Image 1 (cartoon, rainbow, N blue to C red):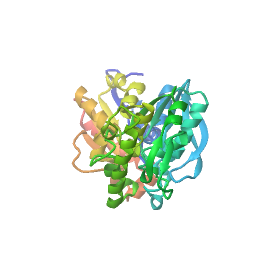
Image 2 (image 1 turned 60 degrees about the vertical axis):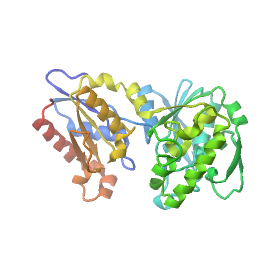
Image 3 (image 1 turned 90 degrees about the horizontal axis):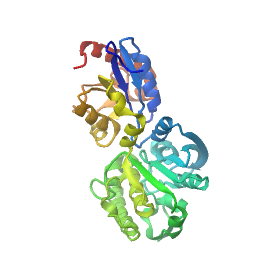
Image 4 (image 1 turned 180 degrees about the vertical axis):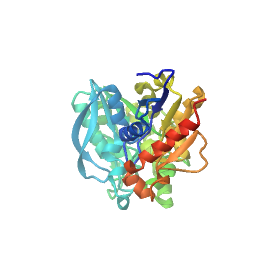
Length: 373
């Protein structure tokens, strides 16, 4: 149902609230709290390549779940899911071996790895898939995808075997078996950041801190990623260390591009295309987006920033709902924070459902006071 002249159209396009709610749940709470005969609501849960993106794309594509067991970032097997429609598999790193599987005390960039992702890819390939979309945000590791690729058939030759993060000890590689096994598979990597593999804007420097890495560890990992890039470059025509999106998921994007000719793309762009976002936008006066913590990084490649740019281009009003927000963000008409109502950030994360009714009432009051321009 589209909005009529008597109804204000509102497009609900939130990202997941990491560690708290998936995008479907955020949409559900917003839709319930904003229900009003004056509004026509269009729930369109969002994903940018990070947590929950595979399930979101599966929803729009009508793909079905496939269950298997795979390793988490520190090698523990658990039940997980990818999605399939025809010869296409949608596989998400975060749900298999992402940071969300670890307690903060378990963060360890020298041991965290991506072998579980490789196991899921093997499962898909062995069951007749010919196209694989990898959603790679939310990783716990900075292993350049070496764990996944070894599981898939890449031979690694290491100086020792002290670390599960292979890039710390890799001396050479042989990708012959890997390339032969996957020669008929087309890989697309959906990225939530467009940073390169190495350097001050690379995988270790930008995302090491949130994975528990110290300054000393970040420096060493960046050095090891540069060495890894030179090994990959020997088997690729691509400029591995500086390739756009290459630093996504601890460098896994660059490695898949180099050895498997994967196409690296914006996860947000795939969401916008397959959800029909732009078509619905033409029927709406307002858009509501958001994520768990809204900061300046949210504006670069992630869903809130991508939607903000589109709304500005189309002169559509934009609101953000989040758990908490960094100060100084000016890309939205207004930002609504759960922590404004919860007694603490922890409480907002653990029980967000208690605070959505108040947030939604505040949004409705705002909409009444500020009719769309």
